[in-house]
Image 1 (cartoon, rainbow, N blue to C red):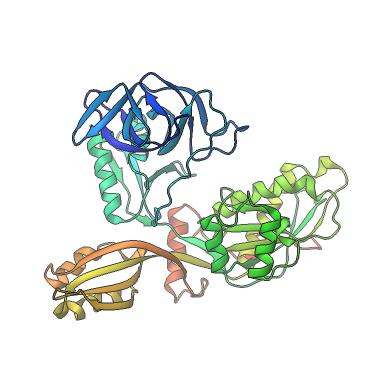
Image 2 (image 1 turned 135 degrees about the horizontal axis):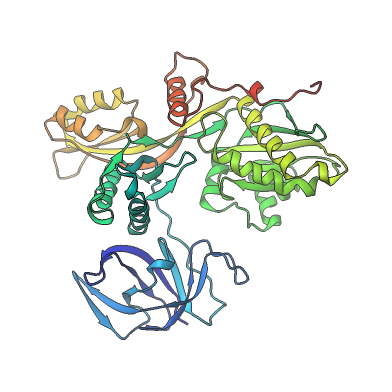
Length: 474
C-alpha cells in the first residue's frame, strides 16, 4: 500500500514546459516509476462511489526535489517527500494515491486554511480568439495556488477569487507571465464577496405552484454564530450520525427532541451554513417532493434574494404543505420554482441583512505615528482592538478590524501618512453582519446593495418580500 497526500506545486519541470510536479509525502509502502495508482480527490465519498476517483493513472517519474534541481530516482520509500510527474491532469489541488488494486483506503483529509478567497476580479482576453488560452491558463493558475478559486459566473464572466489585494496581484502576474504568455488580458475592478443573512424569525410565507394544486409554507429564522461555526468546522454536517446530532442540538441549542433528524439538507453546495428543517405534521406525499425542495434550496442559498450573494446562517422551516394526490401535478417543474419563491420571500420577510468579511490588521510602527494610523483606521470603518509595545524594540504593534471592502489601498495610504514607517499585515478573521436598515437610503449598506445588484445586471431597486409572496385568495 502506498497512500500519499499531494498538493499541486507551481514548480514547472524545465524539460516539460507547462507540466506540474505534484509534491507530497509517502506515508506507507514504496512508490516507483511506471507504477499504476488509484487517485482519490478531496470530494471522494466511499469505496462504493465513483465520485472524484480515477483508477489506472501512471506515475511517469519520481523526483527528489533539491533546491532548483530535480533528481530522478527509481523509487521512494515511506517517510520521504518527493515530486511525482504524470498525475497532474487528474488533480486540481490535492489528492491521495494508493495501489491500483487497493480499494480499502480513504483519502487523507484536506488541509483547512485560516483565510478565505473574499476578493475577486473578472478577467477576459482583449481578443476573442484567445478565450481558449485564457481558460487553460486559469486551470493552471487554480492548480498552482491552494487558495485561489477560478470559476465562471452565471453571466459568463471568468472570475478569479483570492485572499486579499496583494494575493490577487500575484495571481494576475502569474497568469500573465507564466500561464497565458502572449495573451493581453482585460481586468475589472476588484470586488468583495458578501453574504446574506436574516435578523429575526418571520411569519410563514406561502408559495403556490404554477398549476395552483400545491402550496408550501416556509418561515426563516437566524442561526446562532456558534451553530454556524460548528457547520463550518464540520462538527455538524450532512453525514452526521443522526442520534449524535440530535443530542448535540438538544443539549447545546435547545432544539426539540428528535428535530435534528428532520434536517433535510445543508447549503449551498450541500455543506454551507444554512439548513432546511421539516416541521410538518401529518402531510401526505412529503417525502416525494423532498428532492425537489432540496434542489430549489441549493440554488436559492447560492444566490440570495437580496443581491444574489450566498446565504449564511439562515434556517428555513417547512411548517406546512398541501400537495395534490396525483403525482403528475407535483413534479419537479411545479415544486422547484414554488420552493424557490418561498425561500426568497421568507428570507426578505425576516429582515434580511448583508454580511461582510473582516480583516484582522496588524500594524507595526513607531509611537509617533500612532495618531496618523488611528485616523486612517477610523476613516475606513475600522475598530482598534489592541495596542502593545514589541519587546526589545521601539515599535508599537496595533491590532484592528477593518472591513475587506475598505482595505483597498490601505498599505499605500498608511505608508504615505507615516513616511513609510508603518508595516501592515492583513489576514481574514471573521464575517460581520452590517446592522443597518437595508431599505434606508441614508445608510451606506443601501448603496452597497444597489451597487452589487447593478454589477450583476439586476434592477437596482431592492426587492420586497411581497414580490415573491403568494396569497390565499389569488
